[in-house]
Length: 456
Image: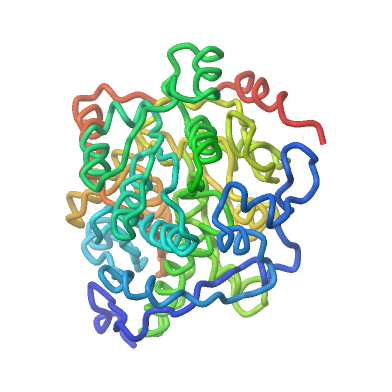
């Protein structure tokens, strides 16, 4: 099929939407290392994990044998409000760059929460409701996960308590108010309302927080309240499972028009959108059916893949969550208050980490100012104001398209546009005013945090 026949927006029909999530771990010959109990250092059991998470989510977290897991009909019905999401051919961007490359982006911002996070939020809220819980607790960085979970909880009449990373709480008041509009209680983290929050404030006076801090507070809040469980928006395998709908739809849309991706790019924080986007393609790679160039893009201010260590570490700053083998900067690493709040996490999903360690994916880190320059260029050309997190992928997609311009290769570049940036105007203002800076942690800072990795 010629390029002229490919529409700007490729939509799947409603009946073409995936009915199952894809679990890439089932096809991986070398599996990600198991989660460990933080006290015994032994592989965690379903019963132990169910003390923090819903039983079904604990089951999904530990499942590395079933490649496909049915999506409950009630979740499918909810998905239909905003899915299938479009795969967009960036004709205007291609023309502006003068590249022979064909650029596609999977747009996940076409729902009220403004991001891909709703894909897992509705699933986790559904299982909490099925278990008869009163409510859930969680953390949020940029606020997209908190917004999505607030919406999902309101749909199922569940109480929702959100610990929001303090720098985002202050920088994004309107994102906070959307959560409150959906009925959530939002607390800046680290707070003085939990034991772990008070400890972190004492150890790091004046800290603007991190996702690791907020996770610790949310877990403590869940375990101290009857009828509550903790839910997480990234990092864990259950989340990547739910987010696989992104990659499944992307691949189905490409297949519909006979297009094979050459390069697949996603921003990388904890790994939810990246893992969800690449899972079906990685599945083909490990089964020997196809080959792709996959690129994870992270901020230079929090470079877990490019400068971290592949080791067991705590998933949270308070060291109450299970230990996970991942690329990490150390659970005590406090990233600078960069504007890509959703990428300010010290570690990376165990699935994404193992994919990277096996050489199935490469990683790049980029500076904040160049990310916003790419975001501005994209907004002016494609008409969507992207989230700062998404813009990391945009930056590298543009880089790859310009390489094609030099070589004359017409490669198919696919990237994930995880959400919109309309609640990130404080950051855009700083960029437009020329007062946005870049921060790159020193080797000494990273080594100091890595020195506190748990002894195994």
